[in-house]
Image 1 (cartoon, one colour):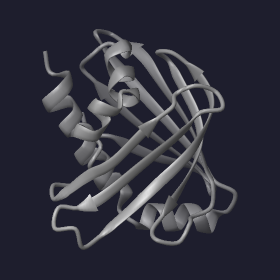
Image 2 (image 1 turned 90 degrees about the vertical axis):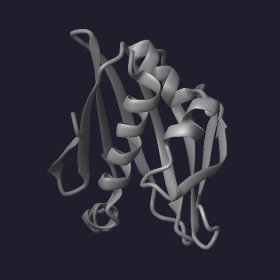
Image 3 (image 1 turned 90 degrees about the horizontal axis):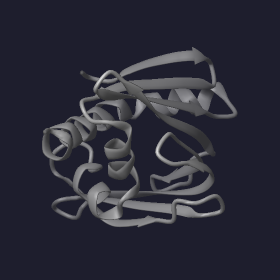
Image 4 (image 1 turned 120 degrees about the vertical axis):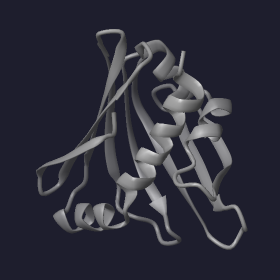
Length: 157
């Protein structure tokens, strides 16, 4: 099932998506660098060239993406604030496109839903203009391409 995005206020957007695997498997796919680098690549033609995960309070994340031809790239860093395995990750991220974007606080929850998982990701920024700019990038298309790949290639039974 494709993701849905609801902008619940000028500075908050919530992404919801269902996966056909239990929370522990969806959690693993979101926290294991070997798995992340295979599926979290956005639309076809992109690769994750760097994937560093220290999934603990006080830890950090770094993901670098590059077009397959090497002509375009960007990266994300994040500070991990809270971890409740396998149910919740709270982190503050910033993208470098190449300029640094304002902080985005991301609260991701993995909720048992029948035989699968409902992922609810709430993104909060300081200014409505920041959220406008985020959504204008087409990020939801890249997110759904990645989530569909995850579902198809790593979570299918």
